Length: 364
Image (tube, rainbow, N blue to C red; front, side):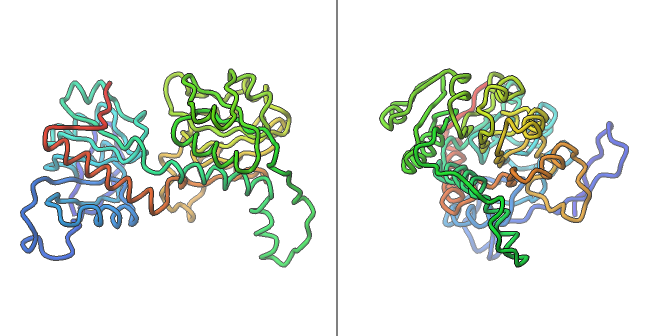
């Protein structure tokens, strides 16, 4: 088990992470000679399965590391030309510098978002960064709809009640989605897939995006400035990327513009919303329902089993006390189809980069 060099800024003992393990099910000598080594950080069992299938018959030498990429764990990538990172891996200047010093030349993101990457540092260090711009927009869109239905019909409360033998219906009244106004904030592939589903429910569609999408217009959607959308929509769903312009797009001021009792869904990025402002809006009743698959401070929590530990995040702990809030741990992407598409696109990105024809580049 390799040890990790201690950062000079840390006094506590550092954890010992397991060595990465290979995808090989048979001794490497029985397979083709590998041409390139790639290390996947934050790899769960489902990543290992999908990437192993996608890499079958290739000469790419894949290794899996369940640890999250941080400055402490970056030494595990020494000798790997390619590092595959996920949404909560740290890719700031210090981590990138350590990766480059260890021989890494390509950072292959297994996600569409790249707000966690210091692109200026990557360019300075000669590191190429690629991403998966689209995998299964239906996966995320359908999860957003699942949150809407669960919140509206109080499925989480009904499920717990019936398990306890309580078959009363008090407090479970919902509303028809048919003919309700739904606001779609961000009308790229995911937002468009979401809008199609809501149109199928018979909803009236409003949209906000700097670049109107003809597909939304064909569905009958009206593009409005964000304040107008917030005032008119009964349900608002966020599907925009996190940028300097969209950080805390939903804040105390914008929440005050909602219809009282409106529903907000966020399957985009946690920092699209100012989380403490959500708590105030929930307490006042201005926000009637909240469904989150992402959270501003999720990096130290999501994808980890912390059920035996006290929850140190007071903001998240407060959110979890509301009966009209459902939080899932960044699982909207988690379908077989999406996992296979992520693996296939990531490996294609690696192969094209190795051949001198990179695609899906992320530029600073």
